Image (tube, rainbow, N blue to C red; front, side, top):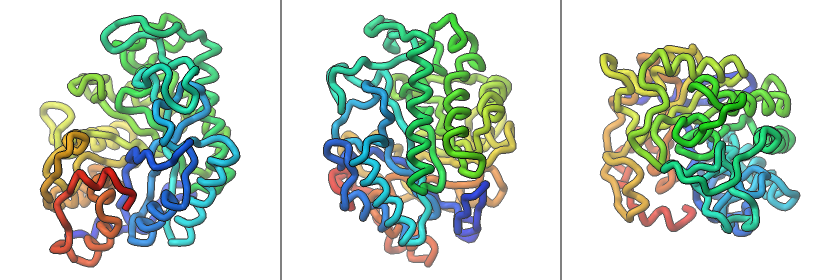
Length: 364
């Protein structure tokens, strides 16, 4: 039943022993933005226990207003990068592969917070999702530096020896705010229809490609839903989704990480394909599916102290067998149990435990 999860996968210079990905999950255990030994050990444990690819928690790029949490790790600066070098080395020594997720929180950041409290909160148009103007409208030069900030962090990742990078373009954070017409009302080259609004993400991909070279895979995380509006949709039809994704294909993205609150929910009427399934069908690129894998309820409840019961993996394995998507990202189940993938591989499913939200408070 689990054979397809443990088939190898390759993309450019990334060669994985299986299809299991550790999903990026904010942990806030890096005081001052510096990942320490506890963070290195956290990722090392998963690498040593059969996780194919680890995607780190969101790491902050070097724009002053990029973060709202001083305990979220930075991906710039000598001390933080030394911490990440240790993380990368420890994962590799354990036989694993690792990609940093490069992140800018955009308008979800509360002014006056984060590593640079005095920094301006970046946005496409200075608007909240309710249409209130609360920040200066960025100039094109400002936007270009936002793009460059991702490329600068991508260059650090390549220099440190990471195996890939992931660009966080989902969940209502900065890049996704540029995609969303509710928050992006620009009339220059970064505004317009959905394909035009995708330009910001495409330029980030292009500049990151220059920074990492041709052989290092670039992953883009996308979502329809936003934390500001769970029912939001960028693309209402497969045709709109195809035009949107084509912009990133043309820019040189390698893998699309398609975030859903529950992976099994069909994306469009008339087809059982989920978002990752549609993305693969429309682009031909490898895709990652994610969303409550192995658990019975979506992750929002975890932030309210709710646990989740186990859910069988038969459906996701069947979809993987059919080629609907290529990789399966696992979040809370791996957060709680570093040996989750190993237990699945060895058929020790009776040892799996329901998710306890208390795991959010520790770095197991």
